[in-house]
Image (tube, rainbow, N blue to C red):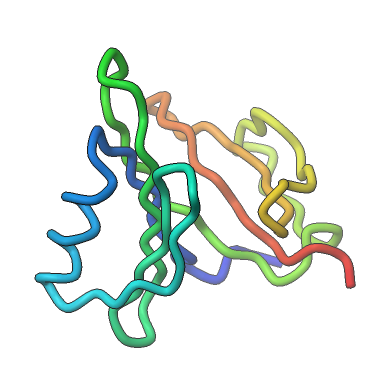
Length: 114
């Protein structure tokens, strides 16, 4: 089994409100907001955009999230460095991280076991 493409984009910001307004101005629609400075937006049927506010002393990062249908059936090629195996998240998915040859960490998401 291989990845199925980009599931979403995780974007850190110093100001959740300004970031949400910016992306809504580009045509994204708010799917939900949390009570702790984060939320999810989407533009049409494309990947979701999850934005999370971070402290001012941290540099905002962006990360692409890849999708797989079944975490138990997914086996990356041995050339892929697995940083963390699949683990359940508090937001309802299973997530694995891998490192590319340039040192970037990628998240791979799968649905939780039903």
